[in-house]
Image 1: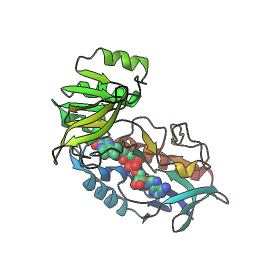
Image 2 (image 1 turned 90 degrees about the vertical axis):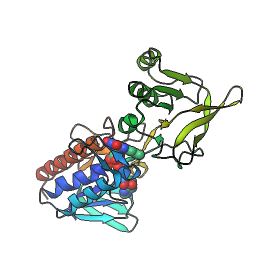
Image 3 (image 1 turned 90 degrees about the horizontal axis):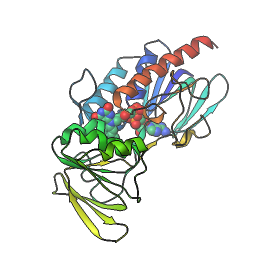
Image 4 (image 1 turned 180 degrees about the vertical axis):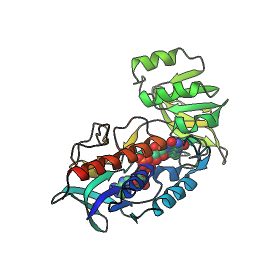
Length: 305
Ligand code: FAD
């Protein structure tokens, strides 16, 4: 068996793998693709100490850093279950099982998509899911935020300081964000809110986004607005469906962790976007991956076989 088995090979999983392997313990990282969500983006400008990189460059660096260490990188495998037993745990994979004394869950998350025409076509060319990441790309331009819950309104508040104008589009008849956020939003003169609006398409000129169309759900009328960017903020779904029997998840499906990345089960740790960690970013995920590995090592030396 392994001492530490990391599930997921994005920034959190790679950091956990490197930190575990540096302790000289038997380590494996299993995942469906090295890099995780960073593969879905082009420009990355907020990984401190790396002023500018791209998703594919960062994925290659994660791969290279793991290759510097004695760890088994098992790619193109999907974990489907996690069961305790014996001295540790069994992780069930698409092709067989792996045993480990400690497990680190780092399966990340995926943004909920609108599923309208233009969303896929203009992804990274105007359609984005991350205001912290991409806000500065739209400096001086008009953008829309789709979703009027907490994340949508936070995005609008954040973007209003950077872009020329923000239109918040909400499907329901009112915004669902906290009162304090709505009050702050109401004070801004470069933000408009449209409620009761079902986005029907994201429009472009073949190269980049130029606007979006929506149906007014009360009148049934079609409308269009001109924007250069669309921030989709309708939820982040953690990749934890396979873990519901294994560890405690919160109401959003995130793995509940403490400040040492410990889950509800001793010996199982979790890091990155699949967890309750606040502010889902590359740098925070790497940090929690490192924390999870150090905590797993601590667990192993206190529970010697
Ligand atoms: P992930 O990157 O999601 O990696 C998890 C990995 O585990 C994935 O490869 C996934 O496929 C795999 N996996 C899932 N389930 C299983 C399973 N059952 N078995 C095996 N493997 C599994 N952050 C920034 O800081 N700066 C940016 O500029 C930035 N831009 C972004 C742009 C886009 C388009 C997106 C989508 C995100 C962006 N982010 C950015 C956010 C950042 O990518 C994430 O916060 C970060 O990748 C989270 O790392 P992670 O390792 O926790 O999860």
